[in-house]
Amino acid sequence: MKKNLVIIAARGIGDLIYHLPLLRSLYESYKEKLIIISNKVNHSKEIYKYETFYEKIIYFENTRFPFFKTLKTIINLKNLINQFNADQLILTGSPRRLMVPVYLSNVKKKIIFGGGNFLFSKDNKYQHLTHSEKIIKYTDDLNLPVKNKNFFLNSSQIIEKDQNSNNTVKLFITLDSHHDQNNWGLKNYIMMISKIIEYNVKIFINFSPSKLYFLDQIPKKIINSNKIKFTHNKNILEIMNIINSCTFVIGNETGPICLGASLKKEVHSIYLPIHTKPESQIISDKTIYYNAEKESDETITIKIMNNLLRKFYKL
Image (cartoon, rainbow, N blue to C red; front, top):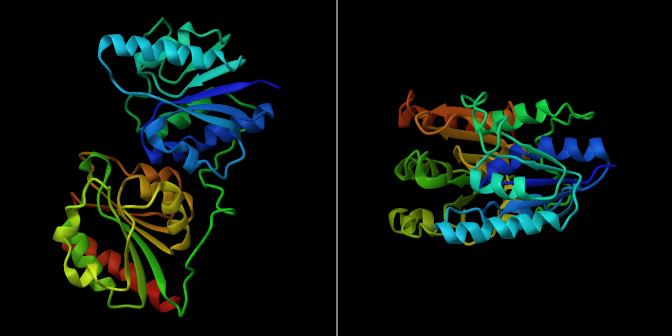
């Protein structure tokens, strides 16, 4: 058996889903649960709550600090790594502020995804790929005995409260995206939601808690509808439970879309190629994508509504 320590530097929820094949393959190859040191902003303790491949998850600070504070975080991370006496360490990114404590640690075998052949150098051979594609490529390069390609979260223990009743169809709609780079537009979602609530549905509307001003722009008809619930004040685990209880997930290509795909929901993802590619397609080939650069807002709305209506009448 080999004790593996994995450092996940990525910030996003979707990034955690993209790591699942790596983490499962390591666990199944070496028959020992992993120690995971994870960026504290990515909510890995909640996302991985029901997974069986890890012994513990420890959060660390992965932020660009002024020089002297950066030195302190480097020392702290090195000391944290050394606590576990790991046989092998895998850092799944190559920021130099994380490469330094890895090199300074006492772990014998160190693997850095994107690290070069020389100290602190970088390997750009996969630079043209998306983040999800890079993780898969570097995982393949490990040549592990067991290769688990499963991107689906273990949903068997996720609580599904408020089940559909009286043929009510439940939808989860997310209105924004990470850094707002991939937003389709609030007015478009308002128009779509106004159409959907005419049917026997329950809609969970999600956006970042920092964007309470959205509530000033959403019509009272939607806000006051008994078919609408807002989830901006829910934690990540509660969001997962809600998504798992829904039939449809709709929104910009961002974290909740990846969660929906990983929980095997019917996902409708809208993206702007200038900012992001439809990365979540690596999770499931059943996700339906809409390119907001090539298709008009009206066309996207019509296509999504047509897809929904076909399913409404079947359910």
